[in-house]
Image (cartoon, rainbow, N blue to C red; front, top):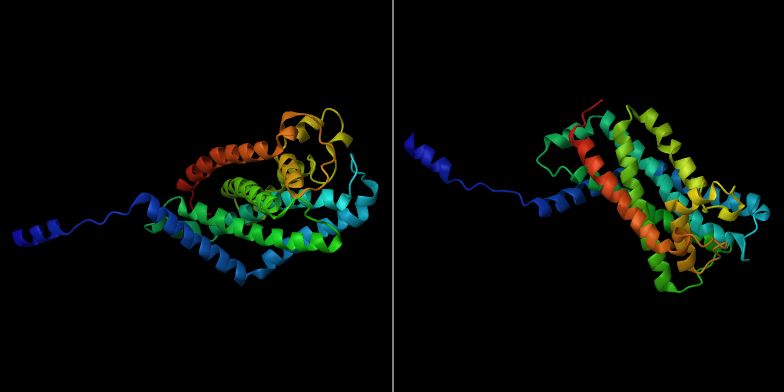
Length: 281
């Protein structure tokens, strides 16, 4: 008995380093989410089709009635706005995806495994970021076909896409948090768009801000979607639509970065806290 106790006591306890295992677990969950997307390609295809429809509708149906202040082609003004709107709308997919995982008991399964608490959340948002990158490629090709051009060089174009990805990643955390608040997938389908429609349409994504009522213009100017749209236009070298002299419009790139970081500082802790108490529905 004494020898057995001594043998057990001598077995080294292997402790998992927090950060290394968190990254590895997060990558595994990201891989799982991306593989799942390939098995349900309809989700990605419909998201792509929706984005292309927005481009074509606004370019060919509404574009003729929307002059761009300061001059310039409306398609060139529109494309960066469509990209910002698309990544914002992608947050709805994060909401539905997480709500579905909750309803199927997958989150309980993850919680029973010896893995990092943040891995599921990081894996979800990172997988959504990769899908956003693919959507950018499709939108850019669609835009080039209908006349959009990158006028400010390759380096600035890469910076524009990187900025939009940061913005998308911040919105994915909002979508994930909302997905843990709703009771089921059906509710997630509606809840995901209730807050996204005003956020995306009260902005300069589709129309210049100066055409809005005066009381609404400050809301649109401080809207992060407006800043992301304007920053992308400036980096791509596209028409900006004379956005005005307010601070977020004169520092669009800086405000996009700051607002994305603020959103991450708010919704990452909220999501982790909500996840710790999450149970199957």
